[in-house]
Length: 419
Image 1 (cartoon, one colour):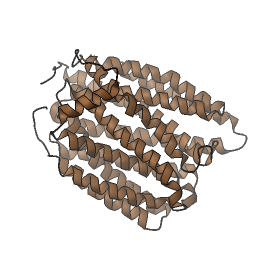
Image 2 (cartoon, one colour):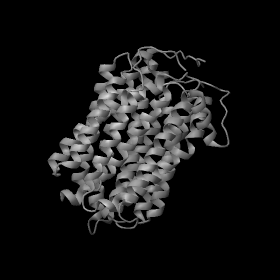
Image 3 (tube, one colour):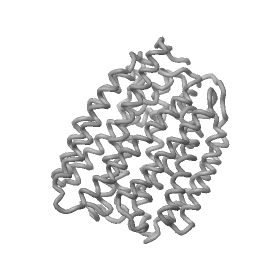
Image 4 (cartoon, one colour):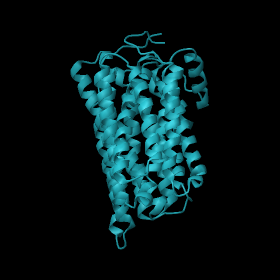
């Protein structure tokens, strides 16, 4: 069944996309400032050793759990109500949570900071299906791939910004007589949250897509119903391929945050590696959107998966140096962007508009389930690799190869009826 159509003018769509890009930039920057700061802090910073070896895996797990638990409510909510309304409420909730995280750093309270991060992740859980679901509503159908490319590029610039800021702030927090720096996390997180909230008000009016969408008390029921509804369609391998991508990304990022001792560089220099990775993902995403034009080019995703597999294996096998890691992370990021954009467009366009929020939320839950499993697995398996965490890249490469196999089951489409 096809969902409702909206009558937004071209000017309204351009303004709406700009507002979404700004809001997404700010949200992604906030998430990455906090997550990266915490990761550095538990590896060798102010809370070093508090969570044990591989403790950054537990930090990442805390970030993913809300997406697994609550996406089943977030999806129907974004179908039943205006995605603009949902987005405004979620961005409004971000500000007090950013302040709470800042207080955690100021008072040297690890558990307050982690709690604030979990709540910020919960806020992001409800924002996510509204954010991705509104792309087909504020962009022409033949421009969805390009819009996704721009959104991903913007997101990765935000990731870069967040990681760079976190690296420098982390170095400041590690220095003696630097009590003034304890104020910086809270101020930065709050300022970014305010800008994102202001931007979201400039979205055009978006009507609800399915006012009869049922919000089950049990969020898992949404996943089961959506899986039954989509079973037998290309949405199933598409969702799995999307989730595998995030599993690989999670493991790779956890390894990178731990390379400081191996490469004998500071957290700021590790942030440069993360920044290169983010720049490359943005470039790859933009390029994928450009070459896809009005099609969904899953063949581009297949190429990206195979390329990621090769690069990750090389990153793990060849003796690491700082320059080599920069080169590998750029290649990995670019091919990851090629992989992600066609799949993202596929998952947005194939479902009917009145099911889009639930499909995207269920895909999010599956993706974060994979990421949570990866984070927990990293924490449990990390001691096995001793002083050679780079070997985990080889494991990531093997997983990326399986992503290529899955992508072979997904068709490229130029125009296909919604399922």
